[in-house]
Amino acid sequence: MGGKRQLSASLEDYLEAIYVIIQDKDVARPKDVAQHLDVAASSVTNALQGLVKRGLVNHAPYDSIALTERGEELAVGVLHRHQVLTRFFTDVLSVDADAAARCACKMEHAVCDVVLNRLVDYAKFVKHSRPAGVRWVEGTGFVADEHLSEGGANA
Amino acid sequence: MGGKRQLSASLEDYLEAIYVIIQDKDVARPKDVAQHLDVAASSVTNALQGLVKRGLVNHAPYDSIALTERGEELAVGVLHRHQVLTRFFTDVLSVDADAAARCACKMEHAVCDVVLNRLVDYAKFVKHSRPAGVRWVEGTGFVADEHLSEGGANA
DNA sequence: CCATGCAGTTAGACACATCTAACTTTTTCC
DNA sequence: GGAAAAAGTTAGATGTGTCTAACTGCATGG
Image (cartoon, rainbow over all chains, first blue to last red):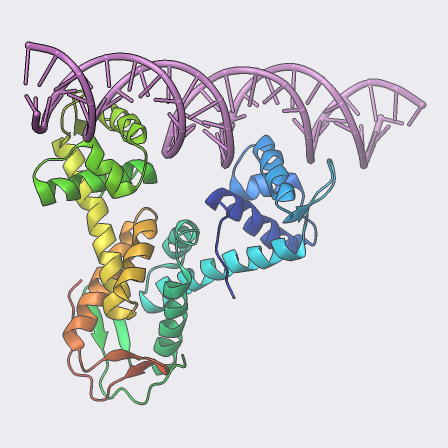
């Protein structure tokens, strides 16, 4: 699982955007990607050339964009990191959804597998132990509920 | 505190390195910075020009490097983010020190204030509630100890 | 069926960050 | 004090990623 990440943050963003757009509308066009990432259309063309060169995307000029198998794997990985971070921020740290997503968007390119896996496990644990567990109380901070029961959130 | 971050990850690294080196040896020279960041000496010269231009560093050619007031503020901010992340990874997630530091090094440029502050609070809380609290058990995962007592880790 | 307009691409500029190689300055020390 | 070594800088190349402006392709509807 995993494997080293060598893709730039920028290309990861493009890959993720393409994946999300395809999920959403079945087909991804350069224009959608440009809007999704808020970049110029020519930046998309440029990025696509890089992704095609790396064998992550299939794209003939003026045609729609498809992910290769490898490209989809990587995109799923990026999205996974994004979602793990977002969920951790909202569920464990009680950060509001907007800020969580915004922060995750940047951090998803930097988080390593070790930390990511621990975040998953920790969030899972907290979820299972709620409402008996650690809670964020506005104006007070994190507090613990009494009588926490059995744990074991896997490994 | 805080204020928007507009400095590139690269320049943040240089600023942080300079700060750490000064802490450590009282004076920072380009060579130290180059070794610290594992870059070519000319890359340091180049970065210094950027930092000087931004008023974050005082540096006359062939002389040692000093941080301006503003530069030191920013450096402290970067280092703080670094340390908060590192401590969270080790203390809360039980990630080993090496991996924690390595990951923090990259994430420190992406984490936002909201999340950072929650990480501080959460780590503080966990620390205060230990050993009665959440623990990582190798081969099992996170577990909760029974009878968690009073909380309140501030806000 | 072709004119218009939008989508997409290409070309060229710019900014950033890095490197190597060559040059300059400073330090060291005989 | 000067030669050799070390430290620092400059110059120039490379790679990435962004933009605007101009051009190309295409799809549509008049």
